[in-house]
Image 1 (tube, rainbow, N blue to C red):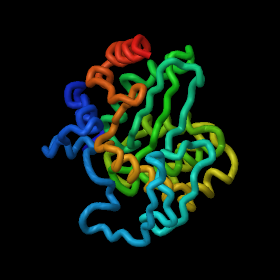
Image 2 (image 1 turned 45 degrees about the horizontal axis):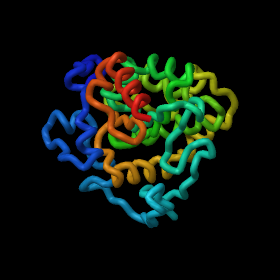
Image 3 (image 1 turned 60 degrees about the vertical axis):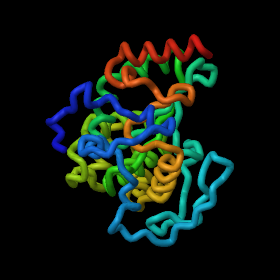
Image 4 (image 1 turned 90 degrees about the horizontal axis):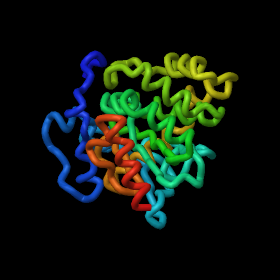
Length: 254
């Protein structure tokens, strides 16, 4: 899926609301191109070994080992479900986005609504969380791991923005250790700890775990946005005005 072919707003409107609420998921080619799929390491032909999962109170999975066989290390600033959150705890509306840094529709959503989210966080209207998924392949894992590595240096959000600003075609080889560490420098990450974290893939097992957890909770496409725990309407994905209207409606019902 070449970067130059930006999906239209109509195609970018996800059917995530129906799926997250238990609706029927799409099976068309177009849906598969949107990132509606099983996490890559769980697909047919991918050998998965050493997974030990224990479901914990509907909130998280405590895994002794990940699909890649590594020990799970949770970023200290992330929630059990992987969300990294910003904004006042007193904000009236909570918004959570499940996204994949390789997903072109996530990139379109960031370009369309990202600045509006920034403003609504800054003025105290919303509290916003982002869960970095790895639905689309190994490069998604590497990007999400690097974002957590940047977060350990206090720079998750600038790095989040840098990844979307430099988004390339899915699994094109653009997301390498070299490129991901270079993005860190642009995002203001300093010191060798970040580079070592990226190179050692410190948080890849955690990324695998939260992606599996999200799938089990009904997140089958990216982006999926929940507003106060309810799937956002399609209009919230396609324009800033639609997103603001959905936030106002949620605030009025709070």
